[in-house]
Amino acid sequence: MNKFPTIGILGGGQLAQMLALDGYPLGFRFVFFDPTADACAGLVGELMVADYDNEIALEEFANKCDFITYDFENVPVDAAKFVAKRSDVFPHPNVLKIAQDRLNEKVLFREQLKLPVGDFFTVDSYSELVFAAKSCEKNGFLKTRRMGYDGKGQHRITENTDLKSLWDKLEGGSFILEKAVDFKREVSVILARNIQGEISCYELCENKHKEGILTTTLVPAVESKNSLMAFDYAKKIANALNYVGVLTVEMFETDDGLLINEMAPRVHNSGHWSIEGAVTSQFENHLRAGIGLPLGSTDMSKGFSAMINWIGEIPVVSLTTKEKDVYWHIYGKQNRPGRKVGHSTVVADNAQDLHSKVVHLAQLLGAKK
Ligand code: AMP
Image (cartoon, rainbow, N blue to C red; front, side, top):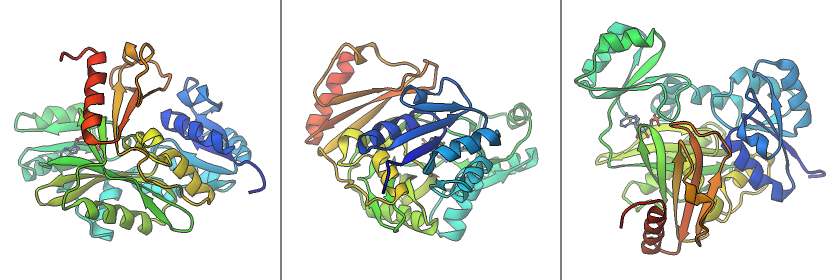
């Protein structure tokens, strides 16, 4: 490399912010592109504020960048393709196209790659909803095919759901109805794949969600008979897509094995622990992969990590305490119910120590002994 590369990020949320914070020590420069003026990545670097269909602004952005990547998978594909004509974009915009539509994703997993997914039905009309709900024994999740994240665009379907009034409320659209999976736990594989096709996987992550939003991640997940398979599935997806960057694959683990839920073509919330808990963070490895550097080690730097999301607001103690092995990340976003505004990572040498530190943190936050 004959100069320090400038990396552009489409989307200026906390993932863009953390990519930059881990890229600056390597000498990289960053420019963010986001339609909102208070996008939190703007706190740590140059933010261009414009709509994704503003080609003049996109052109100006692309001209500043040696490489471009994304902060979230719902960046319009046309914008990604437009800048890809002027700069190196990773992962390829075609991957966005798949990841933006739950149906495309399931077709890739099940039909093309023969990987296991839960039962699902496409729903484009009320009669299809009635049929799908019956086929799922009225126990499922109706999800918008596009633009859903953090549980948004999802509706729980149960015996008590009034399908007619739900459909009227939705006012049409394209959905899939997934049968509810009776899982033992949720896990994610986070891997980095570089231009040469080398892959490094982080330890398996075990994730807990509440109302569709990730609340905690524990790493490494307790090993099970399916753990190795989880890595195989994720690598198969990455290789099939000729993927470049960090890829996350979320799975349900059931008594009968793994079912793939979805993929994220980007750094992921369940990998935030890697900033302090791994030799190389997911953010650094995403950048390394994209600009053609060798991947950094994905080994744990301490034996165990826990990541706790702060949703809606940041606890007051974040600024009044400084505990060993507890790291606070406050994104600088306005508080709002259901919004991810920060996270904490706790690291420890062993599982028992991790548990004590998390309990201690909970007590600082006001939990009773
Ligand atoms: P998603 O946006 O698809 O990742 O869904 C968010 C969360 O909702 C998941 O992590 C699960 O906790 C829950 N969920 C989604 N789909 C299903 C399903 N088919 N069966 C059981 N739980 C689900």
